[in-house]
Length: 234
Image 1 (cartoon, one colour):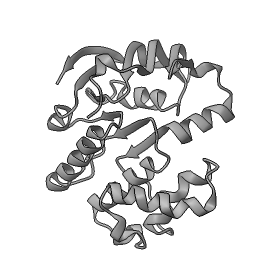
Image 2 (image 1 turned 90 degrees about the vertical axis):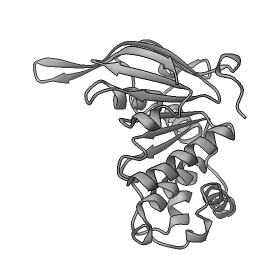
Image 3 (image 1 turned 120 degrees about the vertical axis):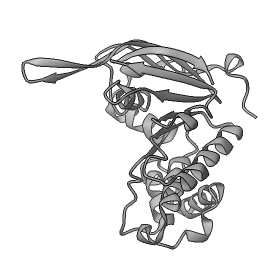
């Protein structure tokens, strides 16, 4: 089991983070002064209505976007101090992403899809397949390693996407509506998988509209109009 959040060090911290996007002569404020700390081994759900800033917040946490102002720390280091190459290395080696739409490459097998992050992580070629198979084993999909994405069910495709996120042994796993494209039974399988990964020590942050999925997290953060509206233990 992961350590209690209050006993674990802060893996990621945001301090008064704002994100503003230009729109013609005006601006869109996606985040307006968000501060939070995510502890190693924690499972956090980010919830709120459409347009509340959830995906923007997830993008900043995963170093896909930079704040317009405020401070973003990853393992105590300011992300603003990193150049583009260092930021890419951090994103590739320390953060795993799971998206609602899976984003599997149709021309590649499942195993080859899972291997793709290793290309950018400077992992020796002879380690690719063993690591991909180990990640697929984690999500109970090793038996589909040589299949194409078109041959997978929705739940299998999402498990393959989770295996791809896990293959670099990231410090942080980010999931954006991971059950959004799945029926209720398959969504429950993915929810149970995320529970299991968290129980094994993964730090998991997920964006969801699904109240039942949110309640499975240790902490629920609710956003509205780019601000934290409430924060509670689930």
